[in-house]
Length: 526
Image 1: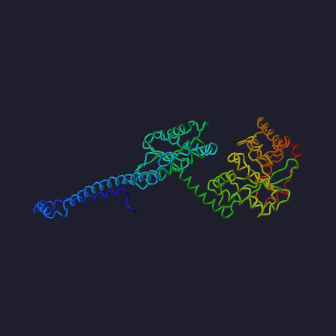
Image 2: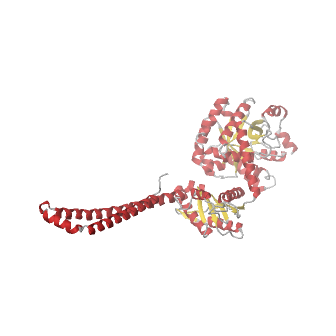
């Protein structure tokens, strides 16, 4: 590695000092010799006797050149000092940039990690504080998406100032994106109270481009012990922050040893999930869809199930979000859809296949092409496939969702709006998008018989769907009275445990042969 500018300057300074000493000694010796030989008088006599040589003028010219050389050297030294100063400034600036975030001017991840290596005699990091807080903003992405990146930058700068006011003489580090780490040098008596203080500061409204913006945050806290180093405490604060984030917005969590066990279990689940996807261990099960007009099974919804010996305890509400977090949801979804299409080809041709799309997939502009490609590979008719898309997925990126839905319907695939009424329900969405069906969420079905308001909502949804020429499907049906009531108010299709749970492909043919439903008989019994 080349020496730094400061080291070069030091070496140059030492060399100049040595030269000055030697030149001074040489001048002193020359002076002594001149005294001993009376050099000046001898030279004067020599010049007078050789006047035609113009030696006095030559000596004068040499003296003038010496003075000029001295002035030139001095100026060059001044210039060199300026250049070294500029290089020192540039080097300091580069070091600052490498260790700080250019937007907020806060220390960055590199600054924190570089100080891991600085240990004292007790093995602790030189910057180990008494407490560390890991902060993640909730709602930052929405601000970026709705108001633009410049508004997001302004929000981050304001957040940095608020966090600095919360830590006092502590240190705020921006780890990247909307994640921050707070190093608290004097730990508060009540860590949770400090976490709530941070959240209150983050939640204060901020006006950006004339729009009032309000975000929240999740805070994880870890208290440092005497023999703890900074990287360990930061890692524990991160674990606590993720626990707080799973608890909901404006949550605070303090690290406990059992959290680490939880993360180890998650890591184990991640490993098993990767293996399960690689070896096709997650397979579709099928829940029947019943046409209330005829009482016949009109199709099946494919639901992912991890059922082999490696999967106990890994329910869909655990491994589906995990697959989304790990970026595996596309591979898993395509794998299950391909398998479901092959299974559905063996059913009677009048039975449809219904398939759910993850919200994260709806940001992929090539989603429609991927689905059509799978249909081509499996030779499954697109007219028998319907794709279920949630309201929240559409709200995230409505433009991309519009293109995907248009592509799917143009290919002959039907599109159903899933979980209607529980997400971002909007008549504007229904007027812009074309849906072949609307699915009423189980939350409404569970209590609508005893809740007049819920009943009115379901009636309104069914009426709205009929006006849009879309069929309605009610999920979560568990009693015959629910079936009768839904049929009476005009619901088209139902599904739920009253008819059957999701079953493996091997049981579908047996179910079709043994199970029949007569809606009129149901009405009479009711």
